[in-house]
Amino acid sequence: MKKKVKNTKSVSALIKLVRTLRKKCPWDRKQTLNSMRNNIIEEAYEVVDAIEKKDISSIREEIGDLLFLGIFLSQLLESRGGNLEEIISDTIRKYKTKHPHVFKSKRFKNTKEIVKFWHSSKKDIFQGIPYSLPALLAARLIQERAARMGFDWNNPDGPMQKLIEEIKELEKTVSKKETKEEMGDLLFSCVNLARHLKIDPEDALRQANKKFVKRFRLMQKRIKKENRELSSLSLEEMDQVWNKIKKS
Image 1 (cartoon, helix red, strand yellow):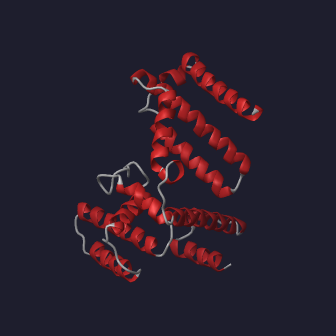
Image 2: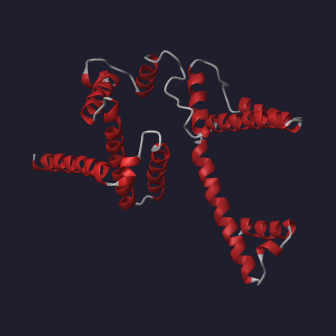
Image 3: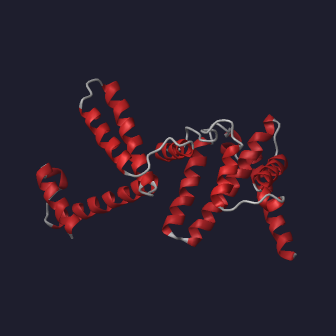
């Protein structure tokens, strides 16, 4: 019981802190829902980064920043007729409705049936997928929704052939507009293939980014040890060093 009281006091203290900052800090006072969009995205990715590093201390800190941001946004909403209490009440109601197998007598055989129930309440199959999401993530979600309606290949061979087809179409483009469109189709097909291979495209690309940066830094170090400058090397020379690092 004491622990619950302590938690309640901590939440109240955080709310009080946000309200104080909104009154006394020029930067906090200046912010709007619109100006905070990038902050929301950045904070979410900082949590993901901390989780991937398995750094518990950083995870706690970043979750704290998310909690602060949620309360901060609720304060910004007050000027438009909303408040934190209403947001919390609406959230509780929403998640109780989404979980009738917990709060009511409804029964599901497995988690797939639960997910199907959640999506059955949506009027449009793409409802709830914001275009502000990272494009790879949005593409995967769009494809998953379409697949639930039967619009999908039975195995990875289909998306693999589609990927090859899109590469050929990209090679034939003439105008910049066509190239951009075909490049988009190619990326969409890459995501589709990854989905069929049970690979998260966002995660795969993040790992590829990290791998590239690591190898590039190793290449810089190796060239520096040879008393040479990276900028003085030809592409062929850099490629030779790069391939040696890949093999090591």
